[in-house]
Image 1 (spheres, rainbow, N blue to C red):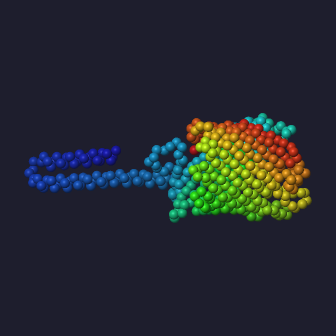
Image 2 (image 1 turned 30 degrees about the horizontal axis):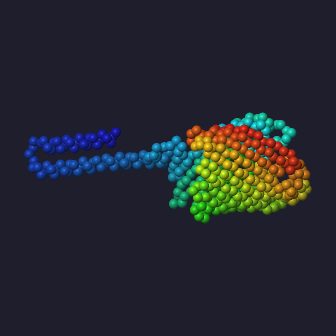
Image 3 (image 1 turned 90 degrees about the horizontal axis):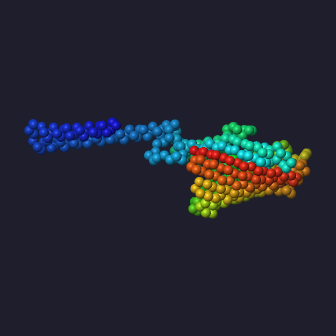
Length: 432
């Protein structure tokens, strides 16, 4: 308002001065009058420029205040979209993005394990009925995270801090999922193990995640580098089992297909397994993995992953103990198994997607680990696990998703006992 009033006043002032000069009764030489009029016009134009510059400086000051305030988002001349990510800039100049979702889950368990979500390795065996016909619900799967990025002395630094509420013995307290820094080619902190490739996981509504894959998040020091435009190499030292004397060494090579069709990866791990209880006995543990995700068409995608692991119980979900031993002996007998998953996801329409998938774990049933588990009748160790599921995800608007899923699975122990898993699950999620 001030800017418009001032300009109008100047225009009026110009008219007044000109009128006075033109109609003045004083007789002045015409050339002299023209010179004064030109000088006056020049002065008025100069005043206009000064006022305009002050307006520009004021706007810049406002923008600077926005950029230096932690509690206010950075100013943008573009209209803000509903699905835009909130961005903040703190006093040190780091850009911080807030993200997450509010999620509610409910399920009806016809038969299965003692608790909500996937626990195919612990479903009750035939002949027991403690966990039949149960209803569960929770909101502890809600998530909150911060991505940050800054540039100090021309060196970019980025990182992530992410929480959910599935911590503690009752899965109802705050838990750190990711907490790491990226500096140049190094990652330092806690995130998903390098041995895993979550891009290959078939979509599953169940928060417990599919059989045949892994979700382990662990402290690590990891180096990565692009070998070319489509291939990336990862080398990592990661926290292994707590009894181990040394960290696990893990490597991964990942290739991205052209035209954003998907990716493929091959992985490997090696570590020393140590048992403090067995006079510090040690064995060499190793594993390999390979998998891919590929868009067959714009609407149809396939996800496949396979791993063979010996002597580890943490990298992949629902597996047996890493080792066992005979009574009064100090020998470590490593578990060895194959894990596999495959899924097809189809985008039925822009708002509806469906996935059908299968996962399995098959343990070596002829090694010393299997013989000891059978002799001890250890029903906590499984010879085989299999599971299939189908789900539908519906998003009426971008941030909101409704889901429904049916899961059926079976487990078999080394002694031949079997158990079944049968559950119907629903979910609603609001992402921000």
